[in-house]
Length: 76
Ligand SMILES: [Zn+2]
Image (cartoon, rainbow, N blue to C red; front, side, top):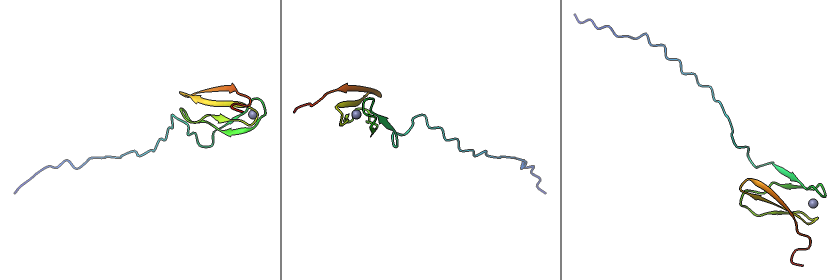
């Protein structure tokens, strides 16, 4: 006569609530608008190649900061 009291009264309810919190917004779909001519360009990646607008303005992402510079007819 074996008697064991198993405590089988566990009510484990795992609350699976997916909380998606994106701290960093994806660069995809992000655009920059030229101040001078109003053209839209894909937002430059940090440390990537600068965006050259046809009007002569350059936009570069330096460490997350957007730098704009006017370089008309560079190298011509
Ligand atoms: Zn422009």
